Structures are given as C-alpha cells and as structure tokens.
Image (cartoon, rainbow, N blue to C red; front, side):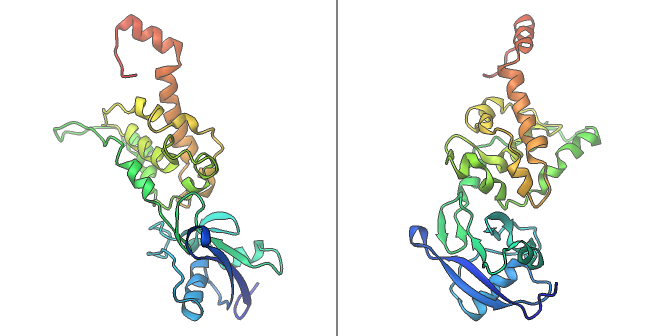
Length: 255
C-alpha cells in the first residue's frame, strides 16, 4: 500500500497535566515515514509549539517514547505503513504521552524518577588490582543488559507502576535490569539481595512479561533479569535447604 499523497488524520495530546486534551490534525504522508516524521510535520505546518522529546531518530537514545494507538512504542521506530494498517478505517491515529509518568506538556513526561532510583543502587564492587580474569561466557551473560536505551517503555507498561502507582515500593523493570547487570557481573562481590527484596521490591513483579514485549532493544527483561533476581531472593529467604546449610556451616549473610 502506497502512502505517498495519502491524507491521514491524527489525534494528539495537547496541553499540560489535567488540562490536556486531544487535538485533531491532518497531514499528507510520504513514503517511508515513521510516526516521529508525522509529529514533526504537524509541528512545522500547523502546531509549532507542540512539545515532543527526541534526539537520535535511530532507536538508540530512547527519547521519543509515546503511546501510539494505546501501545507504548518509540515514535522514530514505528513505521507509518504498519500503523495505518492497524488503525480502523476512518479512525485517527492516536498519539499520547506515556501514562505512567507525570505529564509535563503535550507528548513530554517527567521520567526523572528512574534516575533517582538508579542513584540508590550500589555500584559494581570488584577487585582493586587489575588482574581480572573470568570466562567469556560470563561476560556474554550480562552484555545484552547494556543494550538498554532507557526509553522506559518497560516501566510505562508495567501494571505495578502504571495502574497501581507503587513507585515507592518497586524499582521497575529498567532498574531491575540494572541490578541484574551488576549482580551477574563476574567480578562483582557486592551484596544487594536484601535491597533487591525490600527497597527495590522485586517480589511485586508477577511475571506478566509485558515489559519484555515492548522492549525495542529486544532484552529478555523478565526471563534473563527479573526471574534471576527472584531466584536469588528465594535462595536466601525461602529455601529451607539453604537455611540448614547456613546453620551447619555457620555462614552469615545479610538479611
């Protein structure tokens, strides 16, 4: 289906906070456009004060996160050819800001909470001498966690935060990925398990995998990060064999 010359209707969030409304626009499409191109065209032709956050336009910076037809996506990586096909005939394409975060203006939200949580995570603690040796398999295990672009789509789709607003009790999937990256580092000796359970609330996650489904970097957030952290918590706090072994050996761990 050719998009060139096609007239397309959009409904875009405009305004600030509770006073924001959905405004209608119509633009002419070109071939190869992504949703961010359309937002820029609306800015250029009709609404120069439309606020939108973006930077690289290549799916690497995570800035242009939004909800397109109700689904959290990167605007720069969402092709109009796909969105047009999924939108019911005669209906506008809806573009909204991420729901889970405080609304600033139009399509821009305040995601600073994610960085505030990250500041509370103990960094990697490795050997002081630089004679580091480890198996390459161990390095590969955590390497894909570093591919996170901090778009926070995973946080936006997490029902613990989006629907239940447990921001004080739960660190969210992005920061659980950060914790897994540190915990699985082959040289790290820091003990974060009590914080992972209590302060960062890993037990709040009930493994719906919604965060994994929206990750544009393809990180297996649930299986490779969150479940691994849950297993560490279970080993320390709930495994009776681990308790018996600690009692026999006299091994002390932080609880």
